[in-house]
Length: 369
Image 1 (tube, rainbow, N blue to C red):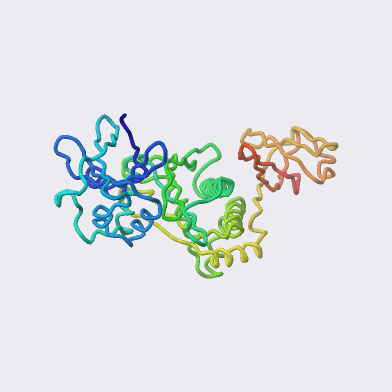
Image 2: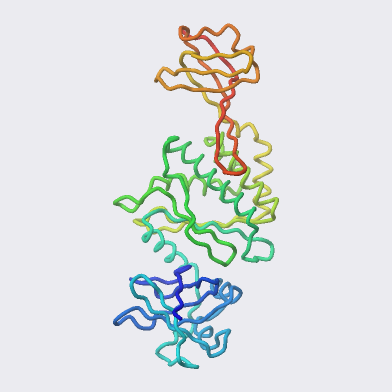
């Protein structure tokens, strides 16, 4: 019976994957090393546990030693690539010849990691983000509920920041898609909807750099300076993301490539003590979470009993909302008098679908000429 594997993570790439982690349908992982590319791509492979794999990726194990002394003694596999399929077969030998073994002294490093994520960006033609969650014992696992909350909050942070500094409500460039997971902490591999342009850059680059600046602020002064121009939903979602990390005793690390023309991998790791310090500052600056909107136009709907209202802006758009102070609507003249209204926009999230809904709360209304 034929057995197939899929690439879970490319570790080294040069024209084609030279070294990668494969995974079969029952979850067994294989380390696959290219040894023959004359007619097709053939890899020598060993089954590997998550523990050993994590030690290798963290640079603590020599690749050659892994192949000379596999965890399942004398058990080797051949992986052949044909028609976009990786076929896994038992390799009929109990010892590898010297020409099939890797050179001694190959320890995996961050430099190879950078090559891997750049290659992912090239393959997907989108910016790629690796978001890693690290608990106290670096267990390489995370609860489903916590993962769902953290990735949803990270997406909210990216989307709110994008809309604040570069995009519009109808943009999709900020949307993130998960395409893989990996060990060495628990890493979520995502790509953004924003395409790489002809020059290998993307619209989301500015957003990711802005968020990086937030998470790299090392002093209170730096952080306050970074959050001031982003006040509103971006800071609110940023605060929620940090709060969830602290409550679950999880530190965060990330790296991303948003421009393959520069081939620059930006990365950072934020420890729990640093997250706690950031959170204290955010609590003291709660006014920065408020998203204030100002509109001008004509009121076309005003209901004192429910507090609901509708404004037609001077651009012809309709804006609807509610007020907790219905007396603000008393005496409003519909369709004839021009008004300037000040609102606070609140985003509510559906706990089941995770969809967001924005509600405008009227704070002030003034008649203008």
